[in-house]
Length: 288
Image (cartoon, rainbow, N blue to C red; front, side):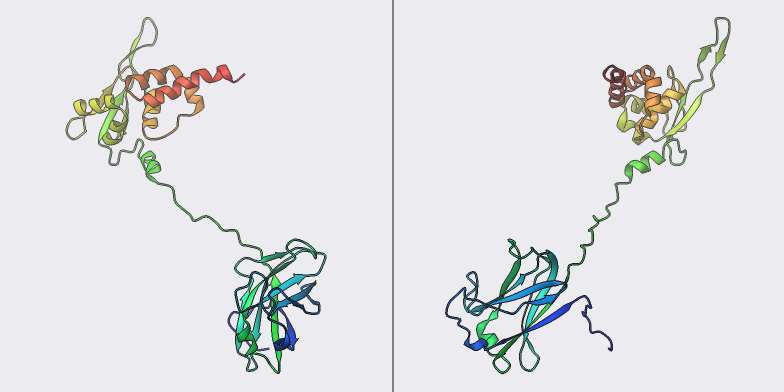
C-alpha cells in the first residue's frame, strides 16, 4: 500500500529471529555458539548461528553472526542482517557486501558466511524485554551487467590523409605522368595522353626523398608547374601514390604488377613498398 520509500526493493524477503535470554548467553568463551531454529526463505532452508563472545576470528568484544544454507542445493544471494532497539532505531547492520555470496549445499566448504555483527555491549543495550531481535533480509543475486569497455575513438589522422588522396582542394603540387612517345607497333609511333595527379608536398616528401627533390626543383614556388614523371605508367604511379597516402595495395594488383611496383618503389625510394612487393614474389613458393 502507498508509495514505496526510496531504496525499497520488492525482491528482498525477510525473516525475523527472536533471541530470548540473550543476556544470559555466555560471552566468556570465544567460539561458543547458539543455533536458531531452521527457517525457509527463497526456497532454501537456513539456520542462524550466533557467537555471543565472537567467533575465533572476531575482534575483542564483538558478537558474531553466521548464516548457514541447510538445503541440498546451492544458491547465490545478497543478504544482510540488522538489529533494532525497542524504539525501532537500527543499532546494527551488516550486509554481504558488493559481491553476492554463493552458498554451497549443506556440508559444503562454503555453505555458510558471516561476520562480526556489533559490540556485545551495544546489543545488550538494545534488548526488548531481554530479547535480541534480528532481522534477516535476502534476495537472489541479480545477473551482473556486462561492463562495456569505454568507447575510445581511433586516431582519425590516417583516414583523413587517405581522404585527401587525389583531391584538388588544398593540394599544392601536381604530378604529370605519361605523355611520352609510345610504340604501338614497328611502324607507328603515338604520343600517350598524360595523366595528372594532384598531391600534397608535405605528405609525399615524408615518404620519398626522390619525389621531395622533384617537388622542390620542378613545381615552382606556387606549385602550379606540373612535375613530369616519365618511365612509369599512370596506373603504377597511382598505386605508388595511394600507398604513400596510407592505403593498402590489393593482392590482385600486387601480384599482377609486382615487377613494375618494385621498380617504381625502388626508383622513388619507397622502401617499405618495395619490400612488400618483393615478399609477394616468394609467397607462392610456400603456399603448397
